[in-house]
Image 1 (spheres, rainbow, N blue to C red):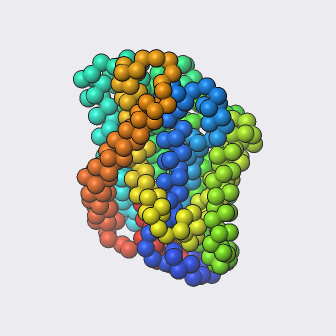
Image 2 (cartoon, helix red, strand yellow):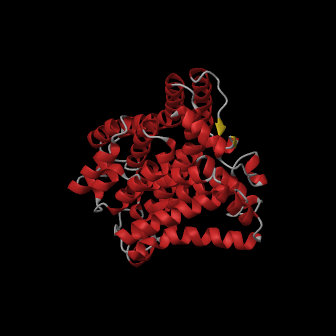
Image 3 (tube, helix red, strand yellow):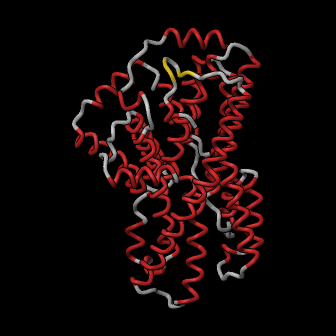
Length: 408
């Protein structure tokens, strides 16, 4: 398999990527992360603020803001595959492939686990120390959720809780972390079992089978079609046809590139109108999310021109993991405190905005602290450890040097 992989790489016609991709950070991917996490945070906000219930909530619910998770999945599949698959395809021996796989798992572990476990521990500490009215903030409930989250089995508990009608706890978003971690564990094993020339066919069949399954909460146990779509975009990104498309996109006027990117994002938000959890909605959602990541992979500042707004998006994107993990718990705490201060069924709009803005400020501050003192140092340590495990081999992409922006 290793020889075949090297021959496949050598046979590929090289292409020159767009200048923006050749070095530095892929800003559009980072900003797309900001769009994804903003959608998820916005999706959870109305559920905890009484003033946002009623007619406004009905209108708000028409937009598929929760699909930010699916967008995250495509991004993750793309970035991971751009890093992992070239290493495995070009490995010269079984031991080298195993070292590369182990190095990949180490990088992922130090990227995901510290933050995930830290906030599970903090949720348990807070719910044990204080008495809250919300059933989502009960200690026993969060102990069960914490165990599921710590072992990255939260997607199974998610299906059980929402299918059975009992409260999940203050960390329901951990279901998607579980899906990703299970995917990271199985993807290297899968690609080692099949020849490189069959990768795309196998991934396509798996993605189609996943989309066509009867939908429901149980499907979230293994929602992998968008992750696989990201992997396939990464594989295609090494083909000459992708290079030609990338060059064409970089030559389009900035306003047109922005319009195309915003239209793709709008398709994600409007996919719910095709019917929630229906086959057309799932198909449209996956394709729109894939188009967003494909356009972002060209890295031509299509989502937002340079300036203050872009810097805000980049800040949100770089802290998106912490924002995603933290936000729901903070919302729950803020809601519980606010209900005690203002127990009426509907809050004044000014009070609701105060609760919302205060919560967002706290979430942002905690995300910054987590990014600075937890994520960044441990991610660097994990990367150094992974390099030692893999023998310090410098990985190259299929057809060229791996851009720093696509390293996990």
